[in-house]
Amino acid sequence: MELSERLKKIPPYLFVELDKLKQEKIQEGVEVIDLGIGDPDLPTPLEIVEVAKKALEKPSHHRYPSNAGSLFYRKACANYIKKRFGITLDPETEVLALIGSKEGIAHFPIAFVNPEDIVLCPDPAYPVYHLGTLLTDGIPYYLPLTWEREFLPDLGSIPSNILQKTKILWLNYPNNPTTSSASKEFFKEVIKLAKKYNFIVAHDAAYVEIYFETPPPSILEIDEAKERAIEFHSLSKTFCMTGWRIGFAIGNSFLISALAKVKNNVDSGVFTALQEAGAFALENLESLTPSIRMTFKKRRDFLTEELKKLGFKFKIPSATFYLWVKTPENYSSQEFCKKLLNETGIVVTPGVGFGKYGEGYFRIALTVEEEKLKKALQRISTLKL
Ligand SMILES: Cc1ncc(COP(=O)(O)O)c(C=O)c1O
Image (cartoon, rainbow, N blue to C red; front, top):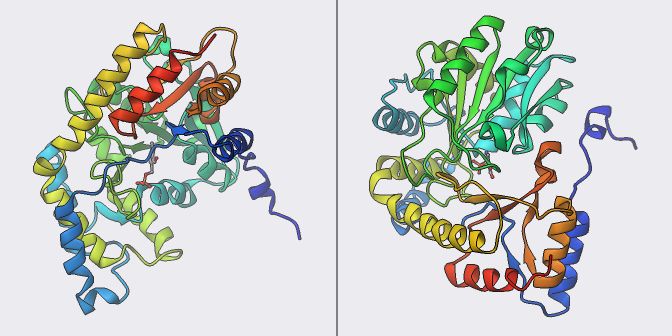
């Protein structure tokens, strides 16, 4: 049996060696502290769990869900977007329920990308943008996100022959892994370019509610964005619901209907009981999220202050629950992460795992409690570089 050419294009998993080393350390009895995982340690707020429990008991929810999402859920999504960003959406045509935003992001290229079409993908990035592209035989064209440019792509550097063949531009702000945010002015430039070259803008807003200062914008706040943009939202990080698998897409009705057509043929929607819990969460965002944000902010403040004292270089994140830190000189990101695990039992993610331009960095996830962070810092301070 032979894998398809398409699947063969998916690069091998980079962290095999690091995972093996982690298992070895655990076997040796080392208390490994894992700062590698982008999965909040905080439980889902109890109020959401209670709504889900009651919803589970409703026999009507035990049947197939509505593919695009129940109207009550899509209305809750539209109301949240209106309240938070001031954008008016038609819940029937401009909102689509997703089984987590990853599902929508991975399926979206199927609707628009033909073999050899160009898809602009940031680098470093959440890998699904370029992997979804490879699975549709599209060609990723990588846009470096660099320290010097505040981890925003240099739109002016993309050659016009590439822009002419571009079908989709992927963006993600607040950004994983670099933690940077984008302004409305940047989004305006993006939409202007997309209009000129007639391509789609797909914005991943998974971390839009994990912020510590000013609330980050939606790309759909920009005039004319609704003509060519789709935005992916997730309840995973906002409400610590990664295991529940629920999100939604908003934007141009043609783009939404095309993604819905793909999904109609591959899945059967989000469990309706979860949609009820999700709608409740979105309707109560203002009371449910401040304590989650506060917890990550406290961790960020503590860790940034202490890491600075140790001489590590990074930009202080105004959003997301990560730190994107430069590796000490003379170490590749993989070498440094291996050394850190070997000598201190701490797992962080090598930047190169997010793309070529992630080399020279490592990512710390603020997804463990403060006591563990303190312990981790104490161990890092013993590291001989
Ligand atoms: C940038 C980014 N987008 C999307 C996702 C997927 O989130 P979910 O599928 O849980 O909504 C993640 C998860 O880590 C992410 O980091």
